[in-house]
Length: 256
Image (cartoon, helix red, strand yellow):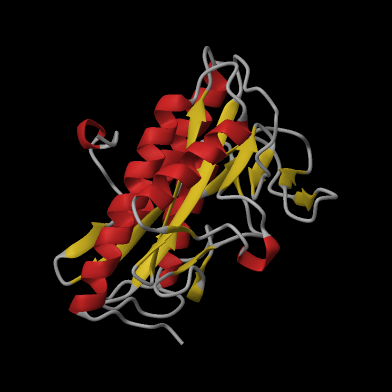
């Protein structure tokens, strides 16, 4: 069942969304050759806890870290580690916070140092997929419209969309109904209503859409070893259109 949110609940989700957006914007500024993904994880946890919130991912179904840190061919759910980011990597950071009982969830893929044009284009198109998906988050639209917006743009650029992992509803729990695939057909699926809140997260691969999970039981990689990009926003559906709860301006992103 898809859970609509009241005005009071939406206000709380705005606060959690704003915080997690600020956390992610700050983490972006740390990314450079030589930093370890574990250092980024520790920075995230400190900022979240200092703000009086909880890192949603830590302990979720046994996940041991505060962020998902996925590098190059890793799609999602990567473990932070002592791996030092290097010139040419692309680094996907996924982070969630729980503030006053409500969850905000967001992700981005960051180029590290000097990155090849094909990888930069992959990141750019994945971001465009998210922007097109957000435009479909309007009352009266259907879930299939969101998936199609992602799929059509990705495939038009020669990429594939991940089918094994999807976006989701979000609220008091990180994963609520409905599932939101990054593929679909216009006009199909449940009708979107005002008050719904979605975490929309395109995962786009340079090569095949097929995936596999590493021996840690979490890290998902592309089957062919080609790079993948992942971006995500938490979006409230309102009568006035989509409201992106996790979007922050860079000038206000770094904590005082």
